[in-house]
Amino acid sequence: MRVLGTTTSPYTRKVRVLLNAIGRPYEFLDIRSEPGATALKSVAPLGKIPVLVAEDGTAVPDSSLIASWLWAKEAPALREAGWDLDPHAFADRALQTVVEGALDAAINHRYLRLDGFVETGYIAKQRQRVERVMTWLDERVVFKQPLGASALSLGCALDWIAFRDVLELERWPALSGFRQSWKDAGVGAGTEPHE
Image (cartoon, rainbow, N blue to C red; front, side, top):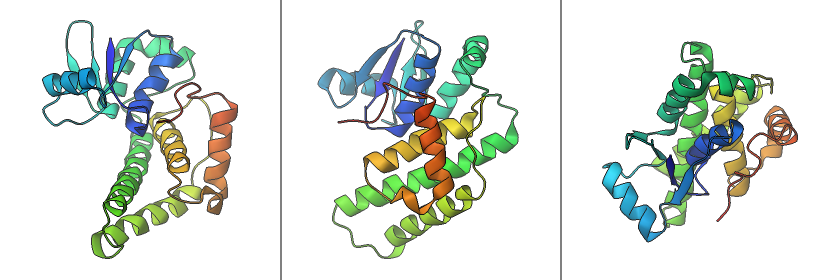
């Protein structure tokens, strides 16, 4: 099994967290390398990461789809490792959608600003969206196990926000507490974002 992605991507990290949690061996191929870029072109016409390439050559794109695929294949091992990724847990999936919408807005905001765009219009709306969602989540999120899809996305998003110094997480005490509990529980240990 191969995972194509980057060590900085919170979406790639979701997949690595789950694979590590169940002790499933995999090859990680960073798409910033020539072999990784070549592999990505051959299996992902959108160029989007992560992509999981199964033993039979099946390419599974998108972190949420990969998590669902892993749940279908490895649910007992994931349950034993403290996860509940039930695709019918609609409230959890709805929360995941909100978390990942904010994460996408934070990523857009960061890269557009790095490209030199001024914080007006669309770019300003992206930052406002992130802050609005963070405030909304701060009133609703508690770290509890087993962890669901929204907790997986949130833990990876909060670590990415801290890694990229996008926002001062201390502004949201419940989210800061969630992140600390995530770290204290060892969730994602060894998959932390890095260059």
